[in-house]
Length: 127
Image (cartoon, rainbow, N blue to C red):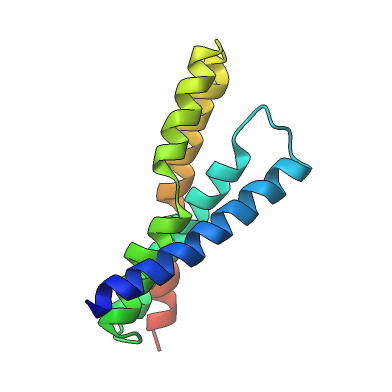
């Protein structure tokens, strides 16, 4: 039961941060592309990569903290369902290039963020 509380609290905080990042993105960038969703997916990819490849792998955090940060916080922060909806809307609105760019950028940059966290964890682990 305790793990459900950790996941719930993490998801609430991740969701609140997702809302803030998305609002901030749309205040400074054109609304014609879902920059906020892209940003949270890349940030979330980096966070989960760093948590798993460095903090968890080096036993810096407890299993409860790992659950809080990954399933909870990153689960609330990242937005695959929103990404999917926005991509379909771009295609529906005949914005084929933007729809394809959204898929490619989210895929490449999110995987790249996890890979960057992996290499950062390796560098930090060498002492």
